[in-house]
Image (cartoon, rainbow, N blue to C red; front, side, top):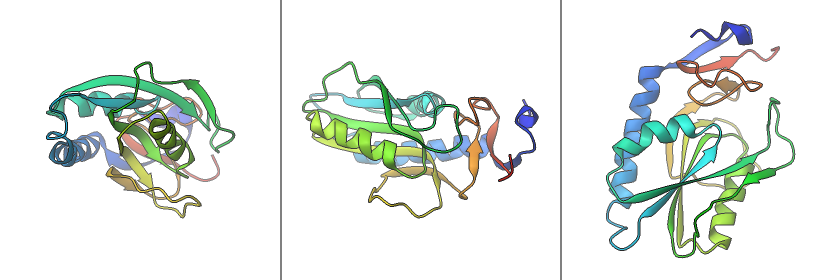
Length: 182
């Protein structure tokens, strides 16, 4: 698939580069988490909808007991700029006493990821480890450290490999960005 239906786009990372980044993240996650779960599996918490592709690629490389759950929180919808935080789906499983691996597609401003992380802790998680496929290189107004980052991208609107542009392009084979005027 070429992303031409979204207008002119520029290629940042190939599918092979994205998959290699996911494998590097898995190695680091395994190193940190595989010894933590003798009595209770890690809760892998997928942030819908963008992180579906990342989680699907990441899971086969993780070597520790885990359960899979999801949360759907959005500030973008089909827009290209963030708005009010909208909680659509909360985790179905209890997070009390759990170690959570929270996986999102992108760290942009950090508001969504920080809100979900705070929610997990308020629900009783003993630890929340965060992973994002891409981190935008931009200043942020909130203090948020992400434990695992796949790729760094410029402060442009990016799509592909789960990330969307106006609801489209999640299936683009790699990471692309739209010029500012589109």
